[in-house]
Image 1 (cartoon, rainbow, N blue to C red):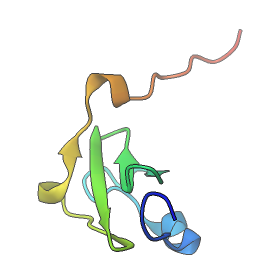
Image 2 (image 1 turned 90 degrees about the vertical axis):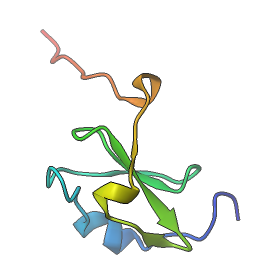
Image 3 (image 1 turned 180 degrees about the vertical axis):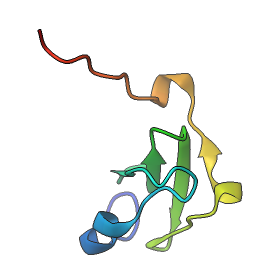
Image 4 (image 1 turned 30 degrees about the vertical axis):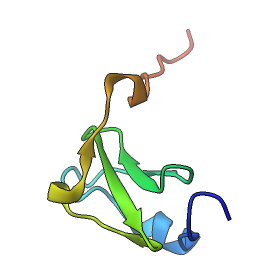
Length: 72
């Protein structure tokens, strides 16, 4: 299995960023939960999300999603 153990999809539905309370995006390859709003990536170790701001890494500029503008 690539990237490590799978995380329960039901868990992904209820987890939010502890800093912003915003949604998280699952990066299966990097085994991280990404908070675009906070600019942080929370690690997943052995299938367990580590939801501590002190354990998160800051996203690089090239990792941050660009905001989509609404279509005219």
